[in-house]
Image (cartoon, rainbow over all chains, first blue to last red; front, side, top):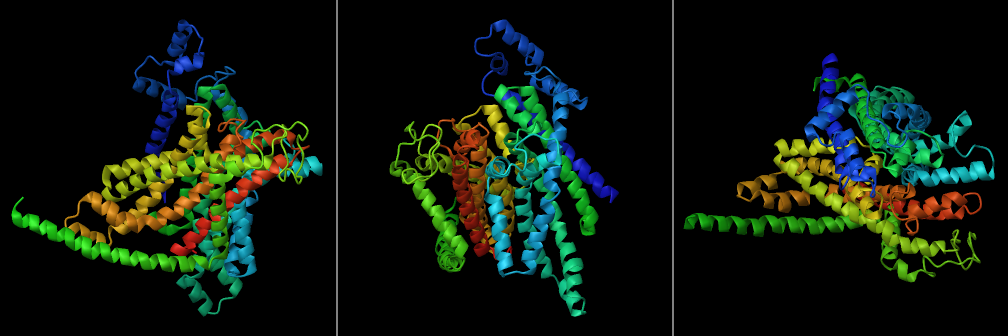
Length: 306
Length: 306
């Protein structure tokens, strides 16, 4: 087990390096001279030169990269152009809101999704199956921003039951949690249905039935528990989607999280902040996948010996 | 080259042309018929196909069929709900929403379709090459895909737009880039699966050049995975493009792009909710049609997943 975790950890290092190069290159991929873009069209030459010096744009690329990584490892991602605050501080202050949203989505969606999927698999070919899968594909096809705005219109404007934006009480989280979770619920419903159908066809399920095991135990212990292995992997991949879904959710409900910070920074061309947020999102994604892979090794002993 | 060798080469090609290709062709003809017959049994997928077809027609002729000009102001009819004259209601300038949706169809669908076509082509070529040659090409392409995948979902598109600046052309580029890695991965595994087939082996032993083997023998074998993924990705491309426009990074606010219309409607949620409901409903129906069609295709082409 230890060896498997260690190998998996080592494998992420090259990925992290490439991600850091991509995020670093971001500022150099902006068409034209970044210093000029930052200073504005009518800025005097000295100002452009000062910005170039400040960003170290005169150094060779490799030197710039090494310096940037060194600083980043120390937790220094530069200063925001807009507010002049350190980027790490800015991101940190917004991070908690995004995490709240991610949890708000995770608290119901995977369970409902897996439940729907398993029910559809057990009742395969019936109206339950048809209805469940139609519901899932609708959830997958409905734009989150549309659902969110309709939710606000109905529950906040018309019924006056829920707040239309911001965070604070649990009530504030209900609508955002619906928007965050819908996609993950739909995806998991689809995957757990096909995963359950696959395990139901396995020999060990037939054996369990043949030896006269009770149907509930066959379904739960033999089929369902084994079908979860695939579902966990998909869940890991979906959490990355949740992070990016927060960009839309935060915009709809005026929540000052990381996603909102990203869209605001893009509007202000606040490049160090954009760079910092992209790096954070990518690292979170890699980290989540690492955790999922390790969990995968825990619940599926076969994989460790490959 | 000696005469005999020349002759041998000729025999080889003619053998290949007359025997192998003929066989494959006959095979595909039969397959297409069987496929259509099987597909027609899936009623939801057939219905989705018709909706999809209508939408594509709408994108081609919609702007000329629209009852009003998409930017015709009518100050006597501002923010009016659905009426006989304006079945989808009007917006804050009294513009007819139905006409705007029709005029916006080529914009929304055009961006989604063209970016998926470009992304799919690049991804397919990369996937074929990395699956066929392996080695450093494979490593490079797959690590590249890993990096792109670490910016989940629309986050990658947002990052690209952040770099290139807002605008519909940049949305096209962003969605195309965001489409590449999924095709590269899927086509690589499809290539690996076909590569070991007997007919590829035969083609190689007959002295076919790599390019010919790749595009005439391997590519047709992977086409099922390609088509299924292609339809599925159009749905996500429409979603990504309209999300970007909703966030204000895509189409101009004056353009009748569906996501941009929804974002305009946000300010009038309390007084004119139809400005949000209807464009969103159109995006939902469009994405749903492509997803249901893709599902039907997948189930028909590859029944084992079902």
